[in-house]
Length: 89
Image (cartoon, rainbow, N blue to C red):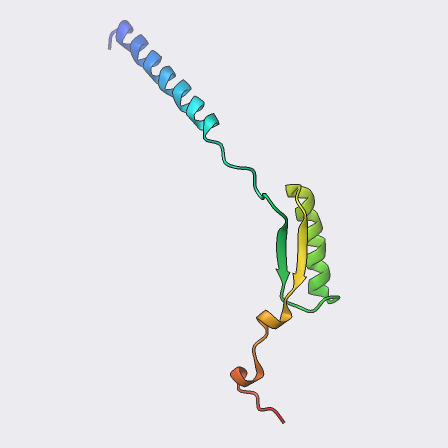
């Protein structure tokens, strides 16, 4: 390859890189999260899993800069007695 051709190729590659960089900075992602985060803990409040969930929520809140709300939702995660095959007395 001639020296002139190599120079043109380098110039073309540089122009493409600058164009790609300009496009990448204009197409940034939106700020996330835009509202408080809800963390569901599938166990009763006050238990060891709840305590661990609250500790994790505090650290996550500090890391992302948004409030993390811990919600204990044991009813949504529990298996109903009739569906589990256990007979009621």
